Image (cartoon, rainbow, N blue to C red; front, side):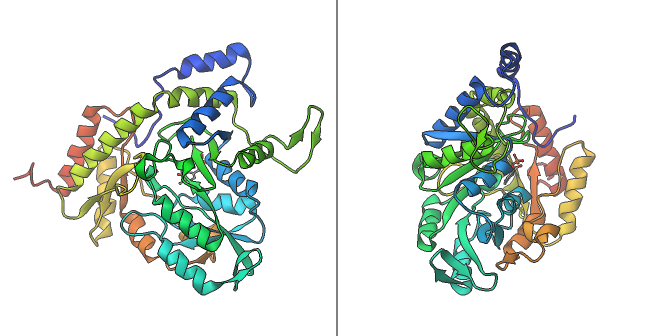
Length: 389
Ligand SMILES: Cc1ncc(COP(=O)(O)O)c(C=O)c1O
């Protein structure tokens, strides 16, 4: 039995909708599925509109650029994230200010971020001026790591205190909710950015989206991703991009979102199995469950709390030896070559966490038999008191 980490579940109407694209010849960036997908995303996000892009990285980049963030600016980003979060900031022309994460929920440490702002910036007409770099802090990019939720109220309060925009990296978090069931786009943040890459709960093959309460922002991004064309002749009022999602990709996305609730239920069931698995061993914890809001549980797995990192590597090799796809987790941004020398807070929590995070197979199409196999092999490795008495 071979168990992949996270593969798409394409057993809905994806093939039928793709056929419709071919039949209608709408295979490029115009077409009914693009509009439908945008409306579905807006509805889920609690916004009037959303715009779709060719990737999640581009969604983040366009949200920043649409908000006027670019050269000479700084954006606070957690170091514990996939490199795309930081890359999107650099693509916009701005620079990252890396921040450590919290031990309990692995999200950006706002207390530490606030201390860093107080220590390294002064008030300036354009915002908070970072004295050493001469750059102006303009935005906060919290990451909904593993599809989990955030304390949105705290983030919005923090942003208001320092005059920042909030661009949420919700790459893997479609279907997650803020406290009291509030939709992500209705929380007071400026933009919510999703990815529909193939390993996400909802895929369009590749793609992304920005949902925002400010219709003007969505329109600006729409314009930026569609070559900045004005009118029907070839007039363009800005150096823009060809970054829009195609109808073919959106066709897959529409079919996927029709089954979002079903996918979320399965993701939760998988998470619950790994919570139970972790509870059986003193050196293991499950991935965090948010205290506020609802996680989309994109990835779940085990967190190793022990000191012997070699055990963690042995576990990965053991699982791979049983044809179970278990990989190292994202290397944090402060350890990546393009970000050597980036402005950063202390990152000791991130340094301790990342090697100990072990995502386990979590495709929405995983069978109960496959899940049992993964759990049994893991229990065999870690020693399961209930099985090995
Ligand atoms: C946290 C995070 N941010 C951004 C991205 C970028 O998305 P994409 O691969 O669609 O560009 C991803 C996923 O790939 C991600 O996991």
